[in-house]
Amino acid sequence: MTEWICTQLDVIRHGEHELGSKICGVTDPVLSQAGWQQLAAQCRRLTDLGHHWDIVLTSPRKRCSEFAFEIGKSLGIPCMEHRDFAEVDFGEWETLTFQDINEVYPGQWQQWISHPGQSAPHGGESYGGFLERVQNSVNEIMQTYHGQRILLFAHAGVMRAIYCCTLNLNLSSRSMFSVPYACHSRIKVYHHPDHEDWYQLDVHNSSGT
Image 1 (cartoon, rainbow, N blue to C red):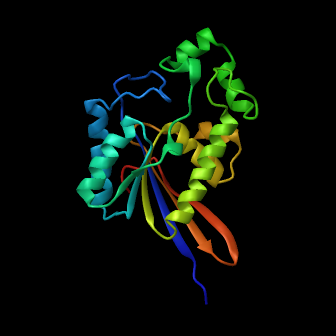
Image 2 (image 1 turned 30 degrees about the vertical axis):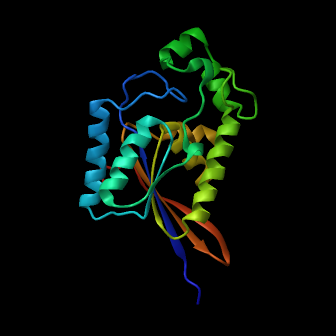
């Protein structure tokens, strides 16, 4: 009798970066000291509870990758960059705050989210293109690391896109998920040759449980 195989994806958002509340997609600030401490505390809680992984993957942005390579080294497991888990390109909105966007480009944020098939009003990446990129990346790592435990360092936008894509949620559901700095979520994917993959949100915004 064929049994189900589980692939576990633990995703952690980067910590606070040096540009603070400014929006960064392709903009590439490093972690602040507080941000580094946030990630270290989250990973320590998880490992203290006995969690371990086979591979570390990371967005190429320094606010993710610098810590990811350090934790991979300390845990003795390989770490690899995956460019398609980078945050969305915010175009003209890069390094603005949400208040700036609402004042200078009123209504455009909601337009961008609500009409994913349209070109991005900020001149960057369309939301539909971003979702497709993330979905393709999740499918890829599920095949490459089938049955393994993956630790991924990524971004708030990427994490919300993963929820929408894997849990078959509509786009309006993305705002239901709080994704603070160093937020941890775990998605388990159950595979069986006679069934479609079954995705389960096991943990969200945990303190290491």
